[in-house]
Each structure stands twice: as C-alpha cells, then as structure tokens.
Image 1 (spheres, rainbow, N blue to C red):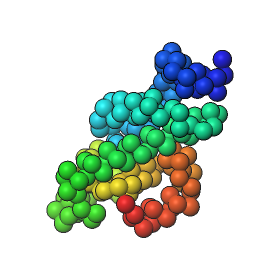
Image 2 (image 1 turned 120 degrees about the vertical axis):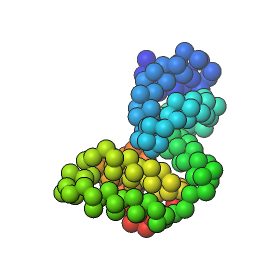
Image 3 (image 1 turned 135 degrees about the horizontal axis):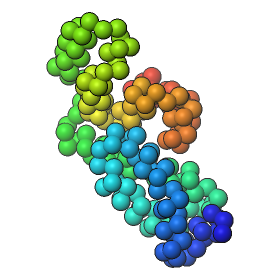
Image 4 (image 1 turned 30 degrees about the vertical axis):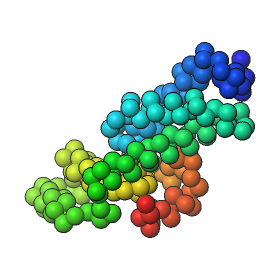
Amino acid sequence: MTETETVQQAKAGDREAFGNIVAQHGPRLAQLTSWYLDGRDVEDVLQGIWASVYCKMWQLEDDSKLLPWLKSITFRACMDYRKARASRLRAETVLPPESWSAIESYVSDSGSSPDEILETRDLREVLSREIDRLPGIYGPLLRLRYLRDLSYQEISDAVGMPVKLVKQRLHQGWR
C-alpha cells in the first residue's frame, strides 16, 4: 500500500492506517521535536502533535504531501510550547547581565582556545539554557544553526521555512 493510500484510509477513520503513519514518521517527528525543544518534554509535546494530526487529517489537501504537513504541525506545536514556557518564565529577548557575566567568567577562567571552550559541556549548557529563555522562533533557530551546526538549507527543510527567511530571522532576532 502506498503512503497516499494509507493517508486516505486514515482520513476515513482507519486507526490501523493512522498507526502506520505514526510508525513510519514518528521517529522523524521525535527527532525534530527534540531539536526544537533541546530534548525537554519531547514525549508530552509529541503526544499533543499526534493528537492534533489525528484530529486534523481532513485538512491535508494533498495526500502526497504528508511529511511536509507533519513537519509544519510539529514546528508550530514546538513554537507554541516554547512561547507558553517563555511566558511562564517571563523571558526577555536579551540575555540578562548575569548571564553574560557567567559566560564571560567561564571563558576568561578557562585558558582554552575559543573552539575548545565551545566544545566543553559546561559552556554549552549555559548557552543552551540562555537560548531557551529567548521567546518565539529565535531560540530554536539559533539552536539549530549554532548548537546543532545545521546549514541554512537543513534548517529550512526542518522547519518548513524558506532559506531566505531563516537567514533573515537569525539576523534580525525576530520572535
């Protein structure tokens, strides 16, 4: 059975067909969710994503475009989760002075080259924590570009956003 046929059956309410979609695309969506959320609360967010997919299957207009549609839903769900988490923490768009001080202290005390410093787990954790405090899309894009070392094209493919827009968002710090 082709994927298009499986999608059509899932749209008609066939739970086994939907289960096949989950089995086929679940690992990819789990990976994307983990990237967007840095491994935090992935299972909870994935549950919400699959519930949303199940309820919205009828909205998929072109059955052959399932994966891009799933990526889009995943991206939006992760951004919504980050936004909710950021509002709970009342995050600011800029790093507070104490964060910069912590980073500066770590760099000045280490005596290592910049590359060696970036490879250390402690600094990556500090940077990761501070990136998570950024609201909206800015943090996930920074994470994918600079902590996961993805190219603009890879980020574009992962988030379903044109390369030009990815570059623009990273440059502007849009949220």
